[in-house]
Length: 177
Image (cartoon, rainbow, N blue to C red):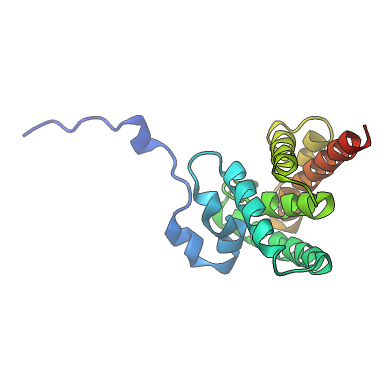
């Protein structure tokens, strides 16, 4: 009889949500950004990239007013989806939830467009910086609403909205100067 090798570090590492989890509930599908949150590498960046591409497609068919209404409705729907998904994952603010990045980056693009590719790329990089590094007001916002339930679900979205505001502030200053 051959000895059983000890488990490797990858065998005992916690696994993220699966495609089955994504498809198990409509809230999961939304909160995980239609699958972008399943990325094992930088799910927040993947969610923001998905948001950018989706926005470029949506603006072909929707007026600015309709895009604004979509962002507002997506915020309310996202609050429910993020709250539900975090509760099902038993993690207050899981990294796989990327709907917060999606809605916040849509807001950036909606308010800052029209911009060419390089302006959009700059907005993308600024937003990712503020969302990931959480300097100043973004860190404050991230600590404001923690936990489970509706308050925690709003907290998942809130720090990304503050990151969007910071991104828009830098873009406004850039345009002014």
